[in-house]
Image 1 (cartoon, helix red, strand yellow):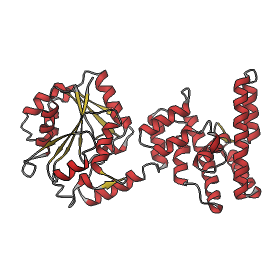
Image 2: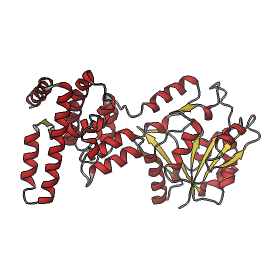
Image 3: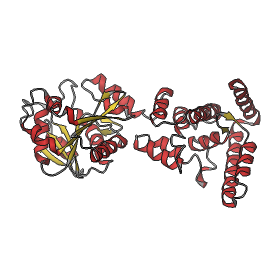
Image 4: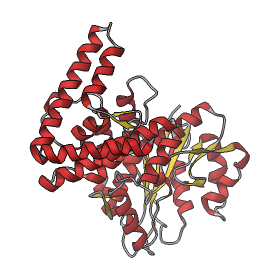
Length: 380
C-alpha cells in the first residue's frame, strides 16, 4: 500500500501573532518537526501546502525533498481549501494519506506506524488516533474518500467532510499524548514547547499509564518501582558529591526498563518501543540495562546506575549482589555459556559498586543498603 503525507501550512497564524511553521521547538522550526513526524515512518512522498510567507518556507524546505503546493488565495480561504489543493496534488498517486496541520509536529513514529498498520489490515476508510478517548492528529484517510472530500463544499471544514464516512471509520488508542497537542495562541505554544522538550521526564502517573497500556503484569510493575527507588536514592547521593546524574531521567528509565519484560530480548525490544514513542534517551538506557557495553562499565551515569539498580532487585525486593548472582548461577548450573555471561554481569556489577563507593564512600553506601533492607521489611 502506498502511503503519502499531507501537511497544510498556508495560514496567517493571526491568533499566534507569529508565524507558527517557523517558530522553533526542540531547536527546529515547527514545520520540520511536522515533516519528521511522517518521515520517521518511512513516508517519503510528502506534500506541503503553503501560502503566507511561501518564499521563507520554500527556502527552508528546499533540501527536504517535499512537494510544495501554493494556495494563492490563502488570505481569503480556509484550511479545508488548502487541504483540497494538497489532495488534488496526490490524487491517484497513493492508497491513503496521513494528514497533519502544520502546527502539529509531535506525533510519534509509534502512532503513525500504528495507523498505517491498521488501515492496511482493516477495510475502514478513515482511522483516527485517540489518547484517553480524545481524538487527535493525524488521521489516515483512504484514497476511497478523496473524490467525496474534493467535492465537499467545506461548510463544516475537514471534520464535516470526514463525518460522511463515520460508519466506515474507526478509532485506535495510542499512548502518545502528543497527538492532542496543537497551538493557536502564544501561551499554547509555550506550554507545548516546554512539554515536548521535556518529554522524557515522565511523571509517575504517565509512566504507569504506559505500563498499563502495554499490559505489563503487576509483579513487573512492582519490580520496576523498586528499581526506581534504588536508582533515585543512588543518583541523589552521588549528585551531592559529583553532579553527573539526571534524576528525572533515571526515574523514567527505571520505571519503564522492563516494559517488554515478557518478550525475548526484552531490553532491545523495550528500547525500540520507547524510541518509537519519542523517548530516545530513555531508550538508550533501557537497551543497555541487561548488558552494558565495555566502555560504560567505568562510567557513573544514568545507564550504569539503571544497570546496577536492576541487579539489586529480585521481584520487588532488594537483594545483595552476591545472593542475586548465586541464584542465577544455580538456575543455569548446566549451561556453561549462560554461566559465563552471568559471571561477566556479576563482575560488571561489582565494578560499578566500587565506582559508586569511590564517590560517596563506604559508610554512605552501607546506609543506603540498610534503607533498602528496611523497605523490604515494611513491604512484607
